[in-house]
Image (cartoon, rainbow, N blue to C red; front, side, top):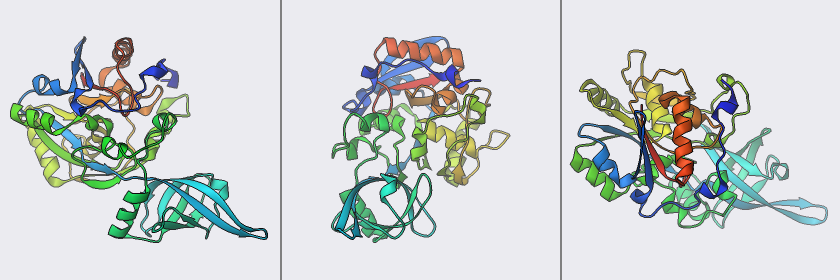
Length: 349
């Protein structure tokens, strides 16, 4: 299985830089059996049936992108440098790991000021990341970060425009509860209050899990033999209540449909060999590619993904490689909008 098996040509014009408004007006490609239907997301209330269970990722994206200034005393005075930081994850000692540009401008012990109230000391660094010790903690840190930070838009959007105030709403789901993600569970961005109410009225069930999506979700696959790729680890939790509800729905013959690859990867990580979901808390680096046997998932709602990405491999495992090629050819021909702010698909094997 080669990396080139998951490649395709995507016209630049199909990369979405803003979401559809309202959220549920985005287009929805429905693939089931050999058929493909062109619908819109609000049609989910007609497409799904009573008892179907949607698994939602309730992670909350933090405004993890910061721009600051490092001041260094030299023989000629104070040398200042602009530093751009993307927070990755908190550590047990209270520090945060982060990406920084330019890395070469930072040394251990130096301070980067991000606003009048928020600054960080460089506690250490390696070849790719820095460890930052912030001057604030707890609610004070959260408030200062909300003021100084910007939403960490994916590279393919950030290359086209900077994040702005609108992104703080657009790049957050309406059911975000637990802060910790540095990328959104983007299939969930299509849900709004009217759609959720229509689905409830239809008898569709919901259960929430948490997977804090990391920046590693955008890292490219660099090996030709995809089976040797190593995934980044992300923290997640399936509560005892969530596991029990999913198991009960499965036992009753209802479909389990994760909304997004993040929710799918989490519930598959928490499933045992007999196909029963267990309460689960920890990090997962599960890598799903063709040949994987799904234990919990019956269908998937997801956006359209990057060529040669691990997410293309995941949906190919669910639907079959040839079928995914036909689905993506249809999406491109019909002008569907791609990636985080793009349209959605409902994939039913």
